[in-house]
Amino acid sequence: MAMNTDIPGPGPGEPGGCAHGIDALTDYLERDMLPADPSIDDSPECQRILRSLRRVRALATPLREADEAAVTALDQDWIRGIMENIGREAKAGRDIPFAASDDDAALVITEGTVRGLVRGAGDRTPGVLVGRCVLEGDVTVVGEPIMLHVTVSIGWGKSVAETVSLFREEVAASLQQHTDLVVAGLDIVVDDLHFEADEIGEVGDDA
View (cartoon, rainbow, N blue to C red):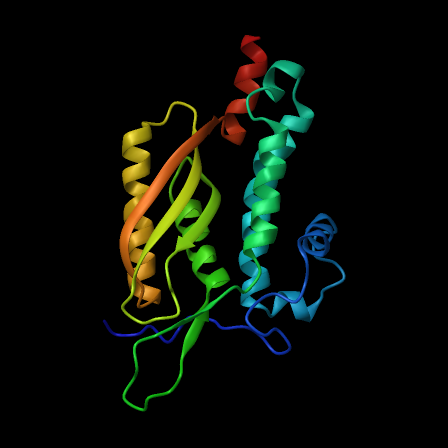
């Protein structure tokens, strides 16, 4: 497979990942990213985390503003769990090598980057919110088969089977384009359902 060289790698001073913790990035997002911090704005890894945080915040904000009946639509503990997973997975993790190129350059991406690709696939799949992503196997060996375990929440009213199928296709396409991983199996577990932000008001109206 031809290697895609457009994958943004870690920025200066960020060996393998974002140099900022989840709390600092959350605070930065709450401040509307002002004043601008180049160490965050210019870091692809930090930007991946911020995109995930925005997605979670888009779901959580209407819940805080809705009545008690609507709040039960998405467990706040589960939201906190998502935030914790994002923070934990943002760490660089193991280096994942690409197959040797013509010049035999040692090119790698990080485990955290791969998790970011999976979350990005979730963001592109309507109704999917990625919970946890685990890479099982020796990702440091080119060609070694691995298993990918992902938990997701599905939007209320969506066809679970169809949504999971679309998400599976997005993940497979993204990993094929951006990595040389040999994914022997993709285990997707739906562990929750949630209301999308535009449905929260309807829940309150019907209560």
